[in-house]
Amino acid sequence: LLRKDQTYSDYAYIGTPTTAGSYQVQASATDVTSATSGGVTVSPPDLKLIQVNNASAVTVGKGLRTYYQEVKVVRVVNGTAFAGADAVTVNLACSSAVICSVPASVTIPAGSSSAYFKVDGLELGNTTITASAVGYNSPAQDLGVNVVKPALNFSGTGNTIVGGKSNFSVRLTTPGATYSSNQTAISPITVNITSSAPAVATVPETLTIPLNGTTSNTGQLTGVAAGTTTLTASGPDLQTATSSVITVNP
Image 1 (spheres, rainbow, N blue to C red):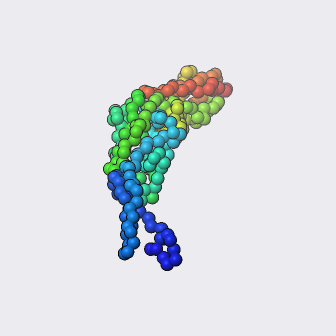
Image 2: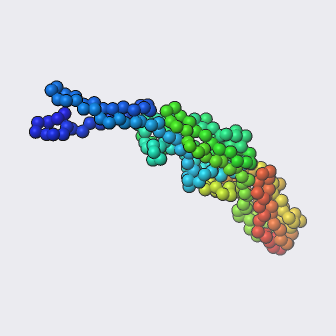
Image 3: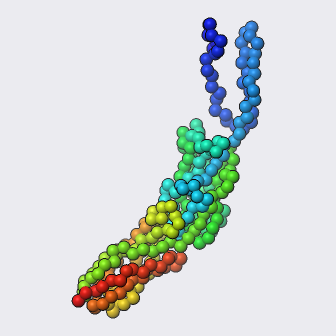
């Protein structure tokens, strides 16, 4: 609307583009020469896969799942994230389904620019994650995935006496991962436990890290005779851990 005694109209806004292409805006009124704007080009938005620290790859332990805020897909225009008016479903895939697994799809909600998703480490090795969505350009660079051996760590191994008991457990960490202590087991993991001096102290043969867990059930070291021992935790494709020296007092 061009008001009386004014030379400029009210502001008007162009609707949200629904597809790629180009357009012009034309203005006309009775007894007034019409005008046409310059051309406007609408480019498809882009998808971008991001590791939380903007690294080129996400590191995940074999048999583990990334922390929920470790990886996300973002919609961007000219390199800048934007919150779209509509939700968008993004299809995800690991280039090697043997090495890693991701959800088949994830939805970026309306009014949001991104959505987080988790990555499962299946086998040791390197691969990439791809993303696609209708009306969006796929990422210029797929996100790398490095699946590594998780490391075992002892907790609570302490001295005891002959006939006494000392509780302990083992927990998993992922070397090189951003949230190295927060990646969880995608299925139960059996950990072998041995005592270097079973005549001094005995331990259970195995402990189990449960589904969705990071720490095993509690084990008990039993003092048998005065002396010292160390404990070892091991398992297939796990980095072995050795406890500090444990003393069994008379």
